[in-house]
Image 1 (cartoon, one colour):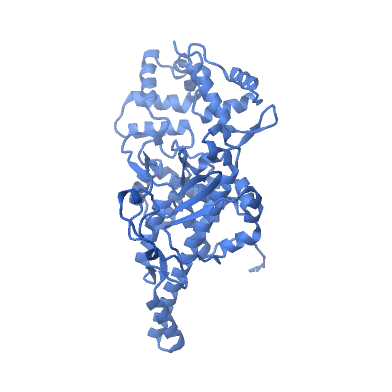
Image 2: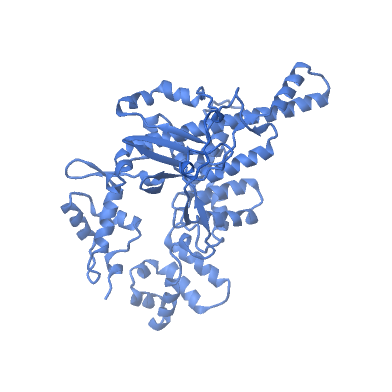
Length: 501
């Protein structure tokens, strides 16, 4: 007999408008410009140009002047944040033609002295490109299903700077559910991860060093039947711990092979890349444009959101008039109904997109202002030792937003300061308390650790216990396992492997 049960569940789902806002928030300046161009092509109801009734942007930069200490609480008030996020702000009209134009070269030296028709140029810095671009190019040639592509993109975005997937697969599943309302399971994610691990550079997508080396060895196995490669595979699969400790005689005894034969396999393994993302093969360069500029005006920081050459957006007047016409003179005719639904859908989509763009701008400015306020000493001096411990949670509580929102703002975005260009994630770190009761950023501790290891006697390198005691003498009281963790995060091997003769 069929049994029917009624249950009540509370589910969190994002509306299409919220999903659009979330996706825009993650984009940096270059990707955001590309997304704008795509939307303008896809939606004919969206146009470029000024609309006095809906949008009134007069500059291609949004700027935000940091509040003085006395005004900080006011700026973080709920009423102020609600006013920003509800888009009730308007901007005064400025007619640039009222100002005298001076085309002299000296006048042009000031970046603010350009007409609207002039293309703005922003400071640029060239980095080695992210390996994720190379993976993305291979992704669309390997997957056809849109759901598989979404999972693959999420996995690629979850890889760390060395090309490893350090996160649990269940965490990736949870991210997909929360961010995209897409339900999957760990088996499906692992199946897609296995395909990504076949991408170039070899070893990408591994979850640990052992898996990374095995992926590269499997790639070599496919090219031919070589006994040295088979022995190398056995070493990594069966004697990996002994290999990391360089107990080669023990490995030779376990695998019952001659020591000279073993040396050839070890030489093959040492030529593999433990950090596949650092491979120089096919690595491109990309130009990174800072998403923010922080200017120190005699102690008062002005935060400028770089909007580059992004066009101003508005709703097409023709589409608006057509919607009003069909709405007023509606007919039972199916063609008219279909036309009305099409027009209304495009106009609504354009409105949502414009609102999402405006909300993105405000969120970026509010978040960056909170970061500058938190790390004020660094932005004054450029001294990394002045960086305070700062977590995503700290900024989220300061501006009363969700941690996931702060995480998206900090993703792939850069800020230009008087002391160089920095990734936003650079300013986030955990903290420890020294003997004087001051909270110190772990970045400072890692800097000291790196400095001491660089200056150590290479014939007798310091053990983790000795490094712990050395840091204690400098006022940093921490456990040996914490020092070992920081050393590993700096990709520094243990003392025995640092020894040279």
